[in-house]
Length: 94
Image (cartoon, rainbow, N blue to C red; front, side):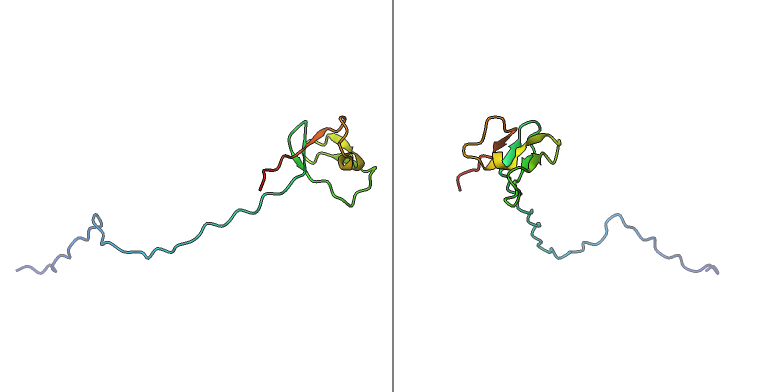
């Protein structure tokens, strides 16, 4: 017998013990509802909502490309004039 202490076994992580992790069922967050636009800009296709509180002479510009689309009165006219640089959005029948 020698005076050296007994060697400890070497630990191996090649095959770790199986640990069962409880699954937490999480629902994915619902996306926010898509904004409802009434008109689309003809030059760039961005959606535009015309506020009813605007006066008839208020100039409407596209928020994306800053193109002058017409006046608020033009958007309320029935049928809209041909010079209007926006087209109505077609809504799916719900």
